[in-house]
Length: 371
Image (tube, rainbow, N blue to C red; front, side, top):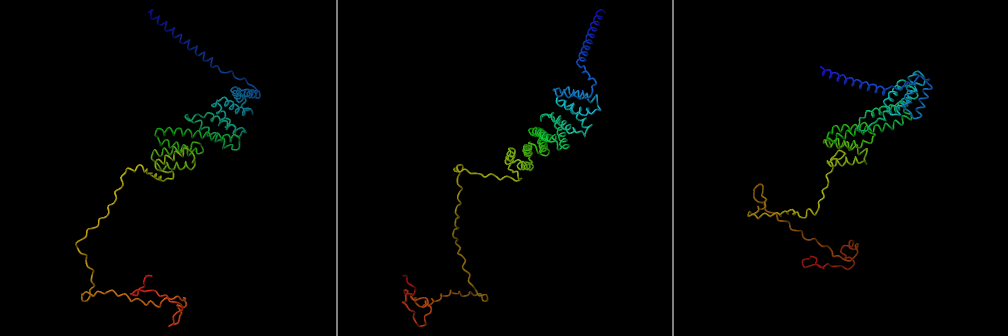
C-alpha cells in the first residue's frame, strides 16, 4: 500500500506540473496577443488630419488604422466617405491587398456616383495587377486584373486612368497568353498533341495582339504534322506566312512542310531535280546497240506475173496497147539574127530582117552541137 501511495503521489505531482506549464503558456500567449489600445473618441477633423499626417510622414499602416477609425467613429460625416478611399490607398502602399480590395469594393458599392469613383476602380485593378504571379503559377489574380482593367477602360474611357489601364491590359493579356503557351509546350513535349493544340488555338483566337501568336502558329504546324493532319498544318503555316513573313517561326514551319513534300498553299511541293555527276557514270557500261535488221533470204518461188486484161464477153485476152510514139520534133523556126526585137517580131512576110544572122551549128542528126 505504501508503494501504491508513493506511485499515486508521484502521478499527482506530474499532473500538477503539466497543468502549471499549460497555464504559463496560456498566460504568455495572452500577453503576446494583447489588443492594441482603442483610439479614444476624437473630433472628426482632428482624427482625419492625424491620419493624413501619418501618411505623409511615411507611416501608411498607422494612417490606415486612423482612417478606419474616422469611418467607425463618424460614419455619417462628410469625412467618412473620403476616409474609406484613403484607408484603401494606405493598405495598398503596404501591400495589404486583402484589406485594400474589400475597402474599395465597399466604396464603389456605396458611392458609385462619387467623383473619386474612377480612381477607386483603377486602384482596385492595381491591387489585382500587383499580385500577378509567374506564368508557372496560378493565374487567378491575372484574370481578376484583366476584368478590373477592362472595367476601367469601359467606364471611364477619357480619363488618365483609362490610358494607363489600356497599357497594363495589353501586358496582362500577354501574360495570360504566356501561361497558355507554357501549358501547351508542356503537353507537346509529352506527345499529348490534342491538348497542346487546344492551348495554342486559344492563344491564336483570344490573344491575337500578343507577342506569342507567331510561336503558337508554328507549334500548331508541328502538332498537326505529328498527328498527320497535313491540311491543318498547311493552313496554320499559310496564316503565319501572311501575318509574320519575316520571323524565324515561319522559316521553321515552312521548312517542316517542305520536308514532308508540302507547301503552305495547299499543294504538293515540286520534286527536286536530280543532278547526275559524270564521275559516277564513267565506270558504267554503255547500253548495247541495236543489231541491224537481217534481210530475208530470197525465196525460190517466182513472183506472180502481171495481170493480163481480158474481154469481159468472150474471155479472150485483149491485145496489149503499145505506147504511143513521141511526136516529131517541132519546127525550130527561123534562125536567130542580131536585129532588134521589133525587127525580129514585125518584119514583113518574105523579107529578111536587117542585120547579120547568127547560125547555131547543129550535129548530123539535127541536134544542137556543143560550143
